[in-house]
Length: 582
Image 1 (cartoon, rainbow, N blue to C red):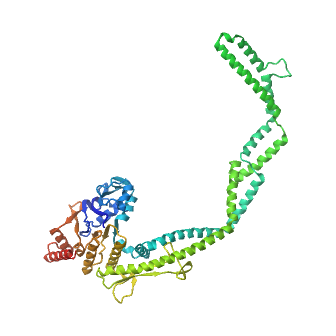
Image 2: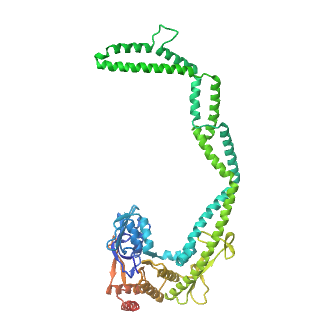
Image 3: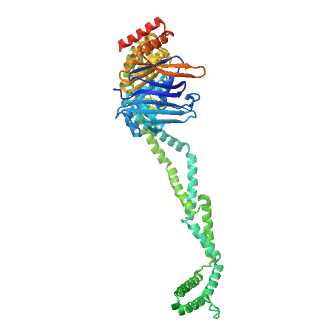
């Protein structure tokens, strides 16, 4: 069931395309046109809609920005619809509107269902909606890592489940190994660090500072160092307030204030304002008496012991040395904090032997776990490789390569420090221990060779198409976009590619950018990208071809002449054969 179809795209100011509407068929749409007419702009536009990289060079010269808009039918409940709605997008009767704007300055904006969204969300939806394949993808298929990825994708959960567990164990093993190497290779440095920490902690322990002790001792030293001046000032202040026993005739503040208070008390009943002042005078009298009492007690308690001052200064000197070395001049609290952290670090360093033993045991356990998981991966890949190769080989028979045979080579490289697979120690990496290579024997008697060495451009195109068709049976997407997948192919092979794409279009939407009339004839809809030039500006437009116009375009593709009777007859024959095959 097709659960997502790209209905149309509108392209404005993108490359050579000024303003064009691309109407796509739910089945098989072929995009044709002369070389340089901008056929790849269709692929580029779809790439932008699907979160591809925005290149400001794509913006048409003279335009402020390029805009691509698309309409995708996505039934409610489909994964793409659910994800879009989670992002706040709205579906209009099962249609999702997508747009992408690229400014000439390089800024890019994306909208989904009327809501501005991150470009990354479009890329996320692309995984659910469209599989894009171009000539660069063919080159990618030459890389062993991509071939292993294709095999793993085909194998499904048989590989993905143990591969996820393997990946987690692999990352943990790398972390454990790195820590173990760090401990063992830096043993001397760590021992020196431990000695320094131990010496510092012994110094701190010998002094045993208390939080805030430095500030308290500073205040005490200040008081002891000025004890005589403080005592003299307190005595003079006390005499001024309470009088001096040695001078009975002296006038003191307490006596004067008391006299003032008595004078006010005598007449306070005659004026409330004066009564308030009398009350305040009484308060002053009480306050003066309290201060005088405290001054007398302060003088009696003041300690002027020079021995105590010497002890305080000695203690302060010891604390100052600690603060300078371990407290960054911030006081005893910083020294105590350093001591706490250093004790924890020393505990780590002193436990190196225990930690090495723990890490070694964990490393050995993880290596055993990886060995078991790598073996599971190898077994699952081996089983899937036979099925995958058989399925691709069967597809190649439908693509005019009836005698071709595809197979997979799974090998491992021996490494005494590796994991155990099949009774041997072999090298391993983040994806297991298997080196996967896709082999092709194009005809009987030819030895299987890596496709990077044994496949021509046309054969590689067909192998990639066969691989994608096989994937369509096990892991389908609603839309397939092929950019010149028929490169290097002609004649009967081109007819077979067209026929196979038409078959794929029965269960999915297929869009093909092609230069081969044999392929275009099988399409349900053919679009022509046509270039015009008014002498100063070159533009390209997109037209839906039907009837006579389609015959003329196929004739041009066949012979380069739209009005050639022979080419027209051949074009009509191609269309008739394609309809009969459908």
